[in-house]
Length: 157
Image (cartoon, rainbow, N blue to C red; front, side, top):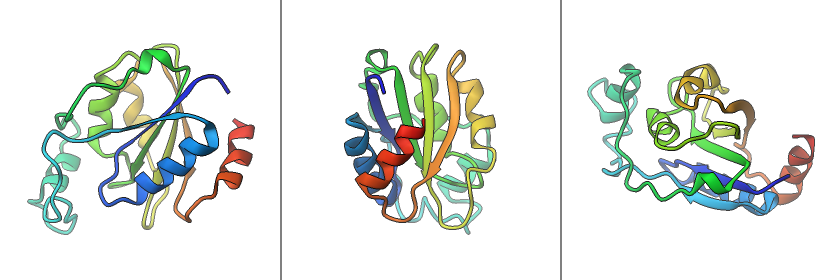
């Protein structure tokens, strides 16, 4: 594998833990995608239709502002992008991230954590945000992946 970056958004820590193991397995650099305004527990209450996350996810044009724009994606051939699955797709902050950089000619491999669903339509909803990139559905990393198990998966890529 060429030079790789693991970029991730984590709402509760589970995706962050998976990202760290993936970065180690891939020998990749790591970058946390952070919102300008951190999410509170109330913001993440998917059962409240007025919560911040519910409003963002019901508006497909929502693009939460990022805390920084320091990911130097130009230096990487492959970018692993991780997130918790929300409403069967990636949180809209992932669109914000992809739209903030030029991914043309790069391979974007998605990874996610989820309480009950798969990737759903994540690739479909993310492709317009990264024109010219190859976006592939990677793997759900729900079960505390190990470096060894991820190296096997990475060898298949």
